[in-house]
Image (cartoon, rainbow, N blue to C red):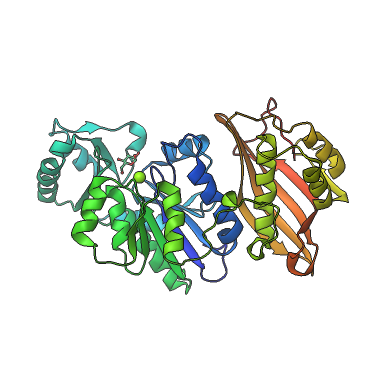
Length: 425
Ligand code: GLC
Ligand code: MG
């Protein structure tokens, strides 16, 4: 990862389905709490790695459905595909490692002899992953017999059972754990091993993550039986692994606190967002809180009072302008009066705002340039824009808060303009 010039302070390697993303939480609260915490306290010096069983196709689909952050590294298809950055550049070296003793045609042919196996959709069949569904009661026997057959054919494979239904066949050197070990060895070679790493998972294909030496681990409260069983048999005396009492991303936040890995209060959990507590002083924290207020204003969760408007007017300085992604330039004064008229316009609706990839750079003794992506979710739809903001500290070290001098937005290519939605500030 070129982004950080030195070791990451912290690296999270998290599974997505039922770990980072809670499919039983229509409000996505735990994910949104995590997002606010990550962007306000960790993004600038830490690494976010998603490690999913999903293929690139299904991963991209999930990103369209859920309010997710953009990871620094994406590991897909059960550790068989590693990509870097926003443009998801594949790691060619890893693909070569996986070619050893692997032939997917032989795997498919041998597996077809088992009527218990049902092939998963075409999108989930990848160069180094062949995937099926199989009933829980048959999984163990099929795994054993199939491994023997494939070994006779000279292949060295790994068969993983997850979620009480998915059976993946991969090269022996693949898997989420091996992919992480490969990444760590790359970091080590560059002298950039992260200071702390936390792995997070809920099901069978995550088990390997917990056997990588020196990492902290959290099995979320809703972890599957197969992972808990693996833990009981293989890692129950490891004090660096916990079974959280909270679900999904809330379990990840819980683990950060339990192991003392850094700040663990999400700005979404703060009662008074405008308060100037010590930990609120960073420019990243200011951006996260500014947009949280914006969300709460439009959801009608904060009172329509003059005091909020006065605070906003104090935050947005007069000479400053806002360049709307459509290209229209407005004074902050005009934006604020538009916002006044939209108090509670999203009340009772599925409306959320979150910021992603918040990167602050100090450009003067009291001035910061903060680049970030702002996302809005309106029901099923998401849109985002790239933002550059110039922020000035009011007191020494931002002790008295911040002033926004300038804000420039551009529709992002990923999820751009949707004319029928109201996009303010
Ligand atoms: C994801 C993938 C699927 C895989 C499963 C377990 O659901 O889409 O192909 O079998 O994860 O690894
Ligand atoms: Mg999962």
